[in-house]
Image 1 (cartoon, one colour):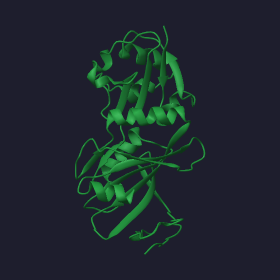
Image 2: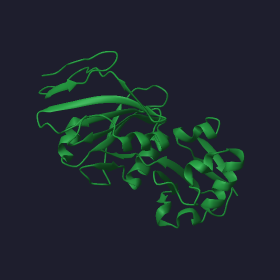
Image 3: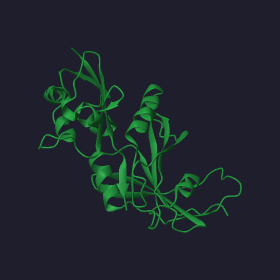
Image 4: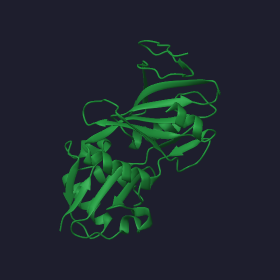
Length: 149
Length: 92
């Protein structure tokens, strides 16, 4: 997700992690095209999204993580992120936001969004890859986990 | 005539949790009218009071985004598959 967001910077990047329906396990990373190609807005490309959804449907998968980047602001859902997700979003998904405003530090945070309410949830890194950047995790009500160097 | 409709998670509260429902109609507008009789409130989540598609919902007939084939006036045939999806969008 971080690599994708860095690659698309200064545009916002967006994508999914799909997993078997009902398990909540994220198993398949799917970087998506940002059809808005914008530094301040993202939207899945409708044609690509249909193709991806058909594959997920056939494989009995669902969206476990829906992520996007902010390129100049914090990794927190904006008013339009929250409004759109509440009205017509993915209620089962973890909404992961990351910011690429700092070229050296990627900040990643995870949220549930429903009915206009944003609830942050803790993130813990497992099996960190080699040569990672420093990941800075925001405080959440339950825990703060710093990992990777 | 029967049209198969794939319902996204966020709208399954209107279909008793079903992800796949079926309905009838010669056009998409007629299909949503028909679906709303069995699945109250479903149409209002997809179609505005002014009779247009909501901005952040995507509707497809088979693989075609209906915005390019007439919107709610898109023609349907027996055996077509309609998919409703959240647009998945946002901005800072």
